[in-house]
Image (tube, rainbow, N blue to C red; front, side):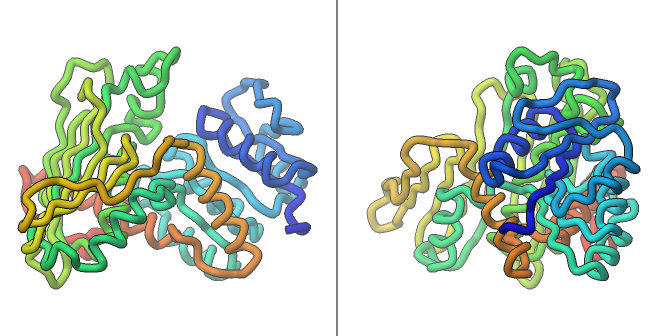
Length: 337
C-alpha cells in the first residue's frame, strides 16, 4: 500500500481520535492531517498537523479520508472529497437525512472510489458466527426476530457531559435511531431486504436532550412473513445489545456485550453456548474495518459495508420517522426517496 502516504481525518472527537491512531499504526510514515472547523487547535499525537478549511485539504491531496464529524455534516464534506477522487471511510450513520445521498452515490460511482460506511459490528466475530449459524438453517424456518440495544446515555462517554455530545443533539444528527443504527444495518445483512416499517419514536426519560431516546420498530422482510421487532433506547441502566431468532427447530441468541452465541434445540430445550469470543477487544472491529477498507482500495473491490448499504439504512430510518409521525402507519421502504 505504498501509494497511501497522505491521510485526512475529518473530526477529532473520540471516534476521530480512534481512527487517527489506527491509521498511524497502519501507515507509520504517512502524513496524517486532521480537518477541524470548531476553532480548536487540539489534535491527537498520532496526527502530523491541523487543517482548517477545504482549500487546505485540496492542496494536501490525500489518497484516503475518514469522515467522523457529526453526521449532519457528513454528506457535504463527503461530496467535496469524492469529487477529488479520494477514497472514503464514512463513520455511521451515513448522514442524518436522505438529502444529497443520491448525489454522493453518483459521484462515487463516476470517480470509481472505494467508500466504506463504518458499521463496525459487521466485523465482530460473534456476529459473523451468528449469521453463519442462521444461514446453515440449524433452527429451521425463521419465525420471528427480536433485537434490542440500550444503554444509559450518560454512561456512554465517561468524563463527558452527555448533553454536549452528538447523541443528545438533533442539529448534530443525534437520537437513538441514528446512533444505534448498527442494528438496522446488521439485520439487513443477516435477514435480507426490509420491505416495510411500523415505527414509534418517543422521548420517555427525563434526560436533557432534544431527540428521541426510544425507538420501537416492527419490520417486515421482502418476500417473507417473518417479522422483526427492534427496540432501541438511551435509558437502560443494564446495558444490552442482543438478538434472538426463533425458528421451527430451535432458537439462536447473540449477545454483543459478552461476545457469545447460544443455541436452543427443541429436543434438548436448553440453551447451549456454541461460540465465545473470549476476551473482548472493541478496537479489533475497527482494525478489521481498516483492513477491509485498505484491501478494497488496493484490489478495487467492494467493502463489506458499501455506500449503498449506508443509504438503505437511511431509507429505513426515514420510513420509521414517517411511520412515527403518522401514528405508527406502515411505511414501505422503497417508497421513501
